[in-house]
Image 1 (cartoon, rainbow, N blue to C red):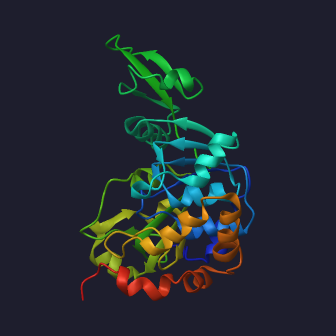
Image 2 (image 1 turned 180 degrees about the vertical axis):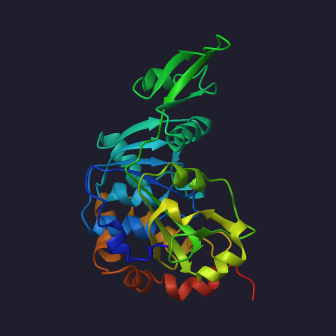
Length: 296
């Protein structure tokens, strides 16, 4: 087996400006924020993002002017309202948007996982999504029934970044028995061309072998795995820690203006030289005991 454990900097080094990037996570859970901050520090621009229900990771990248196009089901800040930096980018025309329903985006990743150019769906009938996105949603007739359907283009991402719970150095990623499951991280991983996984902790391979049914991303799918404790901060990693409401309020207060967000990026993204530095500067490490949802 190949050792795939690397630093965050080394894992993201192949990802350059202009890439199409799929980001995992759902709402304020398991957003790959440590990876997003590293991409901003590296000055990566002109990204096309493919997401499920995205929040902090996309808004951070939008704040840095790194996003030129977004395709997904939702971009906001969940119970905190809209994603202010993403919204500014859309309103100014800097970010192009292509909306999809949940069923349609799932079909797009299923097509990519199966090596197909498209997947047929019924769920967009009666909507005007196809009219606004004829490049990726096209009417079709079922060759067996004659029913009207839509063909949705496969979600072809050059890179996929997911934040997970625990994994071994060979890239096998495991989830806890009790977890939230309203995401499509496993599907995104199966569709990935180049999959980078950040995890809360690296565990011994023997532990993976003892509980093999908890492995939801096998190592053969993974290009690189990185240990980044609190890698979703200020979002949550369900079963481990809650979102940091104090830091989210600080973030949103800065995000009210372009100038305020620039100051936030300088203090919490550009000045810290590493993820560890970020945890110290943001207070995330100090607040972890109060955010932890683990027993004992």
